Length: 316
Image 1 (cartoon, one colour):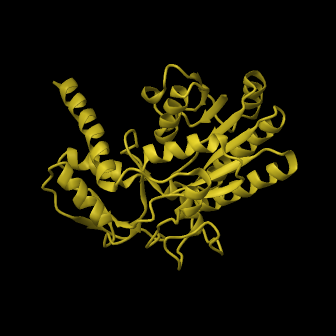
Image 2 (tube, helix red, strand yellow; image 1 turned 180 degrees about the vertical axis):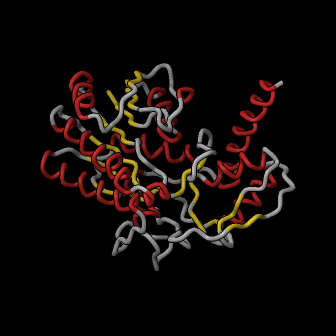
């Protein structure tokens, strides 16, 4: 297949590109490198430095490539930045998607695989793990609102223009290549701090829970989605809750750090608990997460440890 991966120089997108290439697909990366990194770009892919908000360039590239599949991972993904600047968040996450879908309908696209978000769409819930049919949706950030709106737009383009889609509602994805310098990605941030012999800041009491899913398991859902006839949204997680305090102590042990817990004020509007029910993904895609938290954390720490050693050697 000819597959466009937006955000293909980013954390999750670059892993998906690698896997698609191994399977023999022809891959085209669209990334403006605002958060993506050149070192993540697989040289076997066709790379275009383009912003998904650029209607003209996106239209021309779709006409040139004639893709079979759009895998959409480019996004403004910082929840706190979305709160500070909801207009910018909507420009990237909603208008950017609409540019891609308008180009798709003109070029006979066969499928969209969309990176949605489980935790931010559902908001604070009474049922945990939370199923896809939980109602009402109560996103508490512009980022969550944009992801929910994006799913509704995908449904509209499916009904109006017969473009099939799967929206993968990710839990908290972690693993190698995650950005340790942003606001998102507690595993990457904590790991980097601990390797630098610093104490990471835990927001509030650290008892807030999330569902942590390893990036390799997430990549597998993007592979299985290619040949699935399912239309709609699927939760992608582990059905297990892990607190931030537990993450800290697990990573401190793996990095052999003696750092003590350091707590800051709680973040306003932050969810207390989140975990996703995933029986539909198992039933429809035949998918189950294969990495335990300890296995995934070990691989993540090993990746960042190697990077840390390389930087230390360069400074010498």
